[in-house]
Image (cartoon, rainbow, N blue to C red; front, side):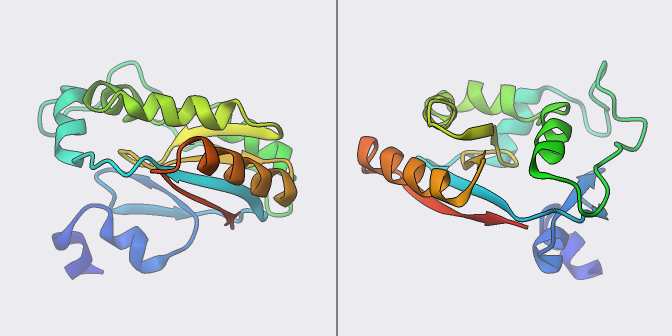
Length: 165
């Protein structure tokens, strides 16, 4: 894990490969007990450099995002909670990198709009620093239909229906 941290801020979470929250520069991992969440993941096949997104965020090295509720630990639903409880909890938070990522690559907004427009979607967000976005769906059938519709409307995009857990 020490080598992973030196390699890159997002490497420790990839090694664990479990649902978790990340704080700091990615070194603080808190594992979550998610239910199976039907989802669609979409990437418009555009590269978005994490460095560019953080530059657009505009923070000095070591500076915290002002006005953001980062000081306390978020209360997540307990093990066995429903999909609805998880969607509500996720909706109550933000991905602080989404606004600067949209400045760097506005097409991320097109992906989010496509996900939000599909029947059965409960929540759509950008993942990490972009450009991949995801939608959580009421059920696997809705996710599969949404993935097919998005892939048909945007044949150049990478689209995958699956589950988060």
